[in-house]
Length: 412
Image (tube, rainbow, N blue to C red; front, side, top):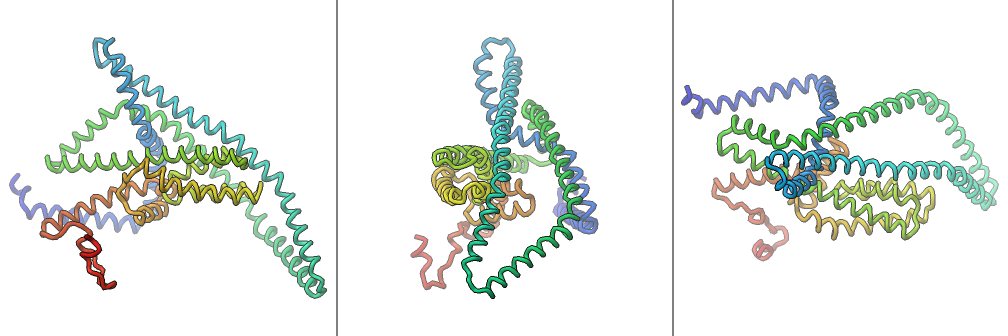
């Protein structure tokens, strides 16, 4: 019987059976896509605290590991049993990580809320004056036109604009107030639910941090029970490479974003631009997104500054361009290096596709995810080429015939 399971025919049959099951499952998902999506949303909501907990633990793990290592080295000579010293080190490291996380979040909220309130009240306070200035400008331009016919046409156009605006308010805006309030209440409920899941995630992260050795051991047991020795080695190598790619990229981007946020705050303070703390946090947070991040954060920031001072908004735009160039050419490469191994085109591709399917989260993790896919896809292709005794380097397949240039002259 065992020899039967090891035959080529049985392996092909099992492969075809698995492919058939996958095709049937895929067809059923397409047939009942709405129900599948609803079920997926329910599962995501149920698992949200654990997802938050895993992400928090993953981000805090470098600090947690460092604190445990340093404390254990310091206090272990005072304990007869090393296990007790390790347990105490883990407890202190966990408390330090949680306090740091709560301190960062609480500090950001304490600093941002007053600035956010000031910016909203400032916009509401200056908006009537801006409208009056715009109206006065229109009246001034209209008075410059001495032609009675042109003045009559302008007055007619203004009358039509006012009528259209009134009809829009009466027919579309006012009837939609109820649905708007409903959407706002639903959004408030979603926000409160997310906050609750995040708080549960902090608790779950404590269990993830303190039980990671056991979880890793259980994962290795499952892998070794399913795969043979060679396959187990490949799976563990895949996990190590994925962890290295994600860890290096995400931690590097966080450090990079903190530096960019601090530089933005300092430069805005020096040039006396409005709302420096609020806008610096926006710029720093969106800078986590590669390539497009600074510009995504710059759009709302420019609008906020524009309502306070249009000239300062122009200066801020120049500041964002300088920061983006500094980050892309100096700070980013110094911190990140080439952690993903992707060319600029594939970085942009990963951001756009990830953001299109998964929103903000997809834009952040799209690059490391695609980097892993790109690496193992290239590895598979090179293995196939090697099996066929063909060149494995990309440059061996590049041609410049359309330019009437010999390939050797370019690639040497």
